[in-house]
Length: 302
Length: 220
Image (cartoon, rainbow over all chains, first blue to last red; front, side):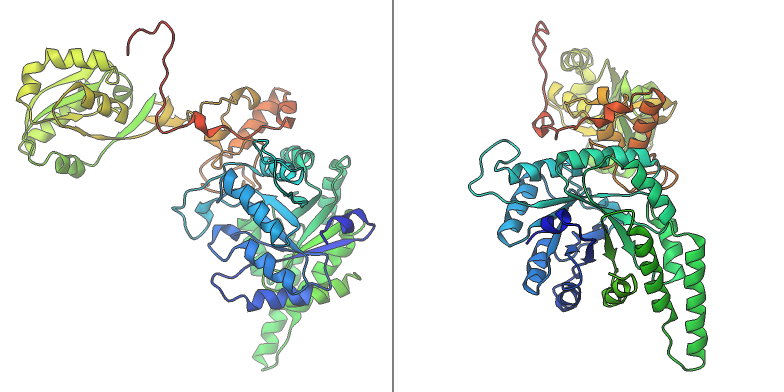
């Protein structure tokens, strides 16, 4: 079952994300997927995230489906031309993958193979257009397909990007091109997100607000400095810093403590509660902290 | 303007190994403007090569260096010097170097690396403006080229990677091309132009070797 029926229902939609390994050891991803599958409506699998070479999204999607997850194939435009993108979409469909999130993809310059040739033969709007064409039974040249997919297509947006208006203009094109749902970059400011959603008022596609678990004050500061469109407000950084100090103090006394984890869970749950009235769901990106997602959902009352 | 830069001298000398008598070819146009193959640089190169034991038989500035018939004529005028040379050192762009190679039977060597088609921002500063994609979309983007100015060549708007300061994720010194487009169109109250879907480009317009023959253009 694709995400589509959930998106069409009244349910508050929850999706999560796992990242394939750099190598062939799939155990961790499969364990994380198995843990999350009963709790969420879909699990995104990143596609050579941050342009750091790793195992592919399609194979990982296929394998997490076997452990009961509903995979969302992330597909970036960086690495494949229009032939390979379309071919991979058809391949994904026959492997049982029914949801695709179309993204531009980080530039190779940001990754671990800086000299790689970047492709970007299509952009994310064009990829959505092409994927919708496949759903309708034709390739992008208009040739008829012998058997067609029926993907539920998704798009991304960065609400915190500046200027926001330009992001919204592009998002409108994505929805027009065929996006049935929207997942956002990490959100930490409910008020700013409310303003963003008000500006999107007319948009037809359901929006799932991005939640990235804060692991430490340092991570928050790093994201503020280095991740485009992400802004963690100072009070949240302070909360994480204080929790970190408590953990350090406990450790000095020879005790184990988990203030940072508990604070991270509390912040994420608080954000979700605040965002819930504003949008159709949340997309949780645990970045390796998948084991804490059940606690986040419980604390958020989901 | 075709923008090129000089190759390192060691590389030039290596390519000229065994060729003691050299004829130099510059260009009156692009290579003069980007100071790689103008009169002055040809003179300097002659002095440098002489210092490294070469004999410079003579020189000419192609007018321009990419004009095949013109260059053939200029080479004929310097027939004696070229005839006595072991090889030619071309100090214009790759286009000029190949034109020279077709205009003489002597071996040619190139003294530059050709970089891009660009404009002269100010003397000595050049900026790539056009990627020669063959399907111009400038009309939709406020005359700022997304193929060239966006590091991903995106046609339907920006990625999410620009910094808060509006710089590209690839290079903190480089403006986000889409931000430039947005600002320009907003200023002109023409943001509506960005609402239209832009279809993928036909890359056949950008094959390995492009030619253009205009009607009435005469023989090539």
